[in-house]
Amino acid sequence: MGKATGFMEYTREKPKERNPLTRTNDWKEYSAPFSDEMLSKQGARCMDCGTPFCHMGTELEGTTAGCPINNLIPEWNDLVYRGRWQEALERLLKTNNFPEFTGRVCPAPCEGSCTLAISDPAVTIKSIERTIIDKGFDNGWISPRIPAKRTGKKVAIIGSGPAGLASADQLNQAGHSVTVYERADRPGGLLMYGIPNMKLEKEIVERRINLLNEEGIDFVVNTEVGKDITAEELREQYDSVILCTGAQKQRDLVIEGREAKGIHFAMDYLTTATKSLLDSNFEDGQFIDTKGKDVIVIGGGDTGADCVATALRQECRSVVQFGKHPQLPETRSADNMWPADANVFTMDYAYEEAASKFGSDPRQYSIQTKKVVSDDKGNLKELHTIQMEKLRDETGRFYFEEIPGTEKIWPAQFVFIAIGFEGTEQPLLAQFGVETQNNKVAAVYGEYTTNVEGVYAAGDARRGQSLIVWAINEGREVAREVDRYLMGSSVLP
Ligand SMILES: Cc1cc2nc3c(=O)[nH]c(=O)nc-3n(C[C@H](O)[C@H](O)[C@H](O)COP(=O)(O)OP(=O)(O)OC[C@H]3O[C@@H](n4cnc5c(N)ncnc54)[C@H](O)[C@@H]3O)c2cc1C
Ligand code: SF4
Image 1 (cartoon, helix red, strand yellow):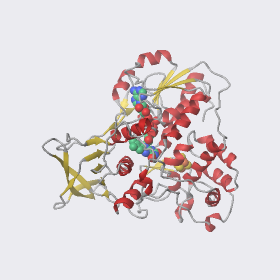
Image 2 (cartoon, protein in one colour):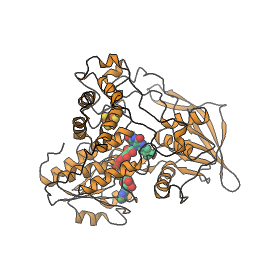
Image 3 (cartoon, helix red, strand yellow):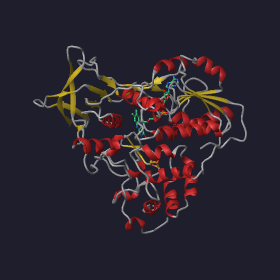
Image 4 (cartoon, protein in one colour):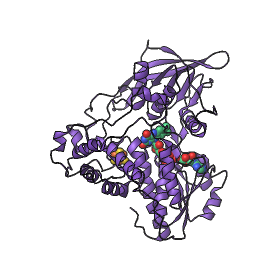
């Protein structure tokens, strides 16, 4: 423990962010780094409590509590306080293949479980993590680690999101020859197409892909397994296959008037915006442009927030986001106790930006869309909504009831549907003969084997739409299981 009284002397500094109004003029990251001096003090706030919950990594009350990859947080907090950055980096890389991603976009369930958070604001763990890895790259402490020996075994990984990349990294370091197949034109999965540039700049993703490539991993892009190459061909050519195909099958809005022109899935909106930015700085016009338009995002989650932030950068005329649930409380409720993640009201980056630009938070709570009305050319004209009340029945289960008299009409030219995902796409799984459960690949957490010998599954494809840090966790673990399958035993964690 660096400074025994640090948590009493220093207060938590909020993660640094660029000005919410002016940052919407560009697509650069909205977060900004801390100074070394500031971070040393933040590291000193860690109490090195006897039983740190921040790195336990589990699920409590249906949400993540602690760090799912069991980052050695108190150890690197101490090293950062002492200015021993290179050692902090070594400790960090023991558990996390890609801290440059999690240090930027992880929702940091570790902070909700920080012991200090029982009585005070948590240690700013995520910002410390980001700074350690950024320093590592800036100072040239990170260079390609080419495996000394090859085992002669070949593994194919389908999907290049964080689960695919983490398993590829682990298996490559174990000496296996790894090929990652990706149907998009750039690797990275949702890190590349999904999470927008202002949350995670794509140079950061490309830097890691290049590093993995230099270390010996092959990336085959623009190739959809199941169409461009069959499951059978892959099984013949490789000793093992891992399905890391994500859970990107989008849930649709079943509603009168859904076919109106101007209604899109959130992922189509976000993906085309990023692709056009990267391909041509929007010169090609291959994106959905909301400039000067009224935008409604349906769905109160993070994907919806990313749509709000994207529309703001495109200079929309107005933007609102509909959520089904009521506003969260300012402080933990009685059924949301530490060390479960705090389920409280926060202002995400997109909402800060909207509030700066338009003077109010864009979120509308407890609202249900009843129907869509188009003009005579089939273009979206307005949404009709009603307010809902969230109630509990006698068994304690929640249900929603419409509140009569709260009907409202909202003019809009664009609607983005962000009401969640239904699981992984099924045709490829059928080609492999892999069994499914609730639209996901049936494979037990910790084992990752499917019913087909040599075929494994990890990440969102197995657990459903989740978090990057869980995808890294599963990618690391599936690599261990595949290594064991190929070699009889494994030293991978
Ligand atoms: C808009 C959005 C924002 C998000 N923001 C955050 C965030 O801020 N923080 C966070 O922690 N999590 C966030 N998430 C969730 C997180 O991105 C995912 O949980 C994570 O990326 C899952 O990783 P994965 O590797 O399992 O799958 P994915 O990242 O979905 O990658 C799967 C890949 O498989 C490819 N693929 C699928 N089928 C085939 C095929 N047949 N052949 C070849 N390739 C194929 C896909 O093209 C895709 O690239 C966000 C999700 C979305 C949708
Ligand atoms: S990966 Fe996420 S949960 Fe783990 S230490 Fe980093 S911010 Fe916290």
